[in-house]
Image 1 (cartoon, rainbow, N blue to C red):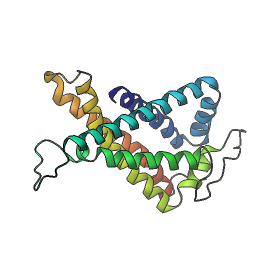
Image 2: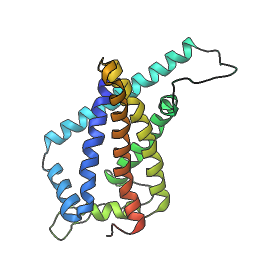
Image 3: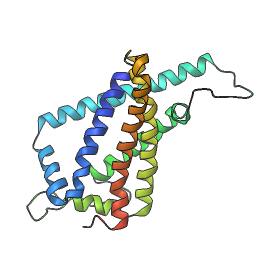
Image 4: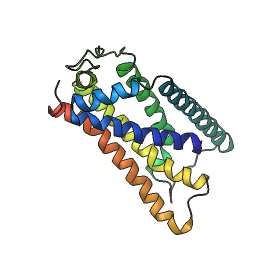
Length: 210
């Protein structure tokens, strides 16, 4: 669970950095997409690793939830939380929302089969796939952008608790640095969240145009 989670955190951060290039216009995001496509087999290897990590993460997460329910079938009459915050208590639900978001995101921008009728990228002035135009076309609908923002909020919550749990499980949450490590986990989650949502917000505000 921890190792697969760590891989996905690294992927989320790398994907975030690549997506941020959209603010450089076609010379940023379109060139970035072209470089990714040129990786060929290496790109597919990375995709296979991430799909495997996601499958393992989901399977173990569901198995642990089922096991937890089996060991504690009786519900508390009154529940008082001492250390468990919203992020830790909502891991299964945020995970489900993230899975739904990933499915929609891939259908929209990878397979071009979105229910909103997102168009496939055309060529830009330099003959590259116009990813910028595709993203703007896909996020101009306020409902779609709102769904992205809500799902990315779930991702941030999931990461806040997940990073801390990962460090603890791997024996890296030493007492001397525990406070710093928890703070760093929250900071990473917040930074990822803010940069990701800046894209749909910029599209809705008209900062990113076709």
